[in-house]
Structure formats: C-alpha cells, structure tokens
Amino acid sequence: MAPEEGGDSQARQDTESVRAQLDRILASPEFLAPERGRRFLQYIVEETLEGHAGQLKAFTIAQAVFGRDASFDAQNDPVVRIEAGRIRRALERYYLVCGSSDPIQITIPKGGYAPHFSSDEDTSTVEAPDTPIQENKRSHPGHERPIRYRDLLLPIGIPALFGTMAVLALIRPLESYLSPPETPPAAASTLKSKTRIVVEPFAALGGTARGADFAKGLADQLIAKLMKVDNLVVLAPDRPSMESTGSLFSLQGSALVEGTVLHLHVRLINGADGAVVWANQYDRALRDQTILDVEDEIAAQIIMEISSDHKLGGAGPIP
Image (cartoon, rainbow, N blue to C red):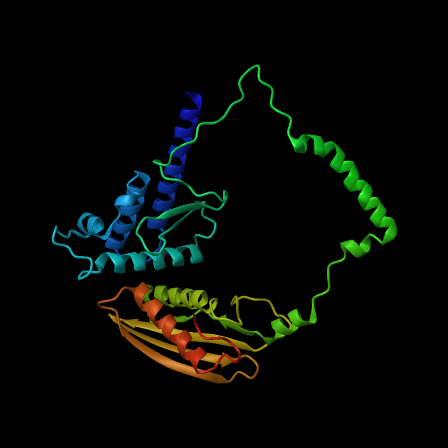
C-alpha cells in the first residue's frame, strides 16, 4: 500500500500547485479580466481538478457560471465561447507580461473548455487527480536485477571513446574540432534582409490609471502580434546600441482616456532618417467593451495597416 499512498500524496501536491497558480493569476493586476471571466476560469480549473473535465460543455458552464436556465442554446447565445476567447487572451497576456517564471502554466486549448496545466520545471503535464496513478515497481527481495546490454557496454565504450579521440588528435589538430563553424554567407544575408522594429512605451496622457493601463497593455499586445509577422525582428525598447543590420523602425504613440472615450495617436518612424512614414488616430467608446478587447482590436488593426501598406519594407503580412 505504500506506493499508492505516495502516489496520492503526489497527486494532492500537484493539485495544490495548480490551485496556488490560479490564486496567483487572479490576484495579479496584469490579469485583465472582468468578474464573470474570473468566475469562468475558477470554475473550469476546479472542475478539472475534481475529475470532471469531460463535463465542461457550454451548457453546463452557462448554467453554473452565467446563470442561464435549461433553455440555453449555445448556437443562439455564444456567451461561453466569447468568454473563453477573452480568458485565453488574458492568460496569454499575463504570462507574456509577468508570469513567464511561474512554476505552473494554465492554458485553455482551442476547441474545448477544459484547461491544460503544465510545469516549466518538469516537461510532463500536471495531471488532474482522476488520472490513474501507476503503482511503483519495486524489486522483490531475493531476485537480482537482470544484467542489461548497456551495463556490459559502458565499461568498454568509455575507454574506446577516449582512444578514438586520441587518434583523431594525432590526425588533425584538436582545435579544429573545438572552433565554432563560420556563419554561412546565406545566413548573414538573411539576417541583414530582415526588418527590425521597436515598440516604444506609449505615453499615457491625462494622468489617469485607466489610461496608463491601456497604454501599457496596448504596447504588450503589439509586441506579441508583431512577433508573428514573417521577416520581422522585434527589439526591446531598452536595447543597447548595435551595428545596423537591415531596416529599423520605431512604433510610438500616446493614449488619453476621457471618461468612457479613448483617444489614441500612433505613428511609425523610420530610424534611418527620423521620417514619419505612417500615422493614424483611433477613437473608441469604452462603455460596452473591456480594455482587453479594445487593446486586441486596435493592435490587430495597426499591424494590418502598416504591413498591408508595405510600410515595413520586406516584412510579411500579419498571419
């Protein structure tokens, strides 16, 4: 019975680690989600940990989280699907901004509502408690472990390896094996042909906390989306000075939130001569949308405009 008790202890430990990560996410100011979205995430995580991942359907979630009755129809009322998309984006932003070193990563794979738990320290997935725990195999007293092939090969292989290295050292100088290979001309040419862009911190005008949050969140969304564009290298704003390789652009802007109205100015500057090659203004009403949704919408529109107009030189279109 000892192995089973050890397995149960490990399962409880994994479950507590996931719950601790959930609390860490919900308490973080960088997790931008409304109250019902937080209830949604907490519900699907707890149900999965309790072994009910197979029951996480739109109908059950709508009744348990959003208060829908038995007449709920997922085809006519997409509330669960929309909220799942928002929480996916909120989790992606959280791990991009401040959660990259967290021990557990919680994601919601597309095509369902059951969350996925993974650990950075251990590449294996953190399983839910209902996963069958394999009993540890112990050798029985009186039975010797059978000799394996690698046990016989190890004492012979190590001396043979050193002998081979000695022969190679006599045939060819050892430093020729240790020196790094030269960069092929094609690889260097490819690096120089790539367009580089840096997303500068957006200025928050008006001195409001909501404007500052939006300016920071929009910059994070732009960085995440620009990294998906072909032939484009995204640089950090505080990068050190470096030798110029390829075109360099700077994306700058300012945001002002007045009540429930957002005013945003964005411009793209050529680093070679400081010329403004593109600029636009965006005005949005924040009454019926969350800050996260507005950030995602405007970031996608900005990247589509600067890439479709070939403002970024050889950069490919947004995927």
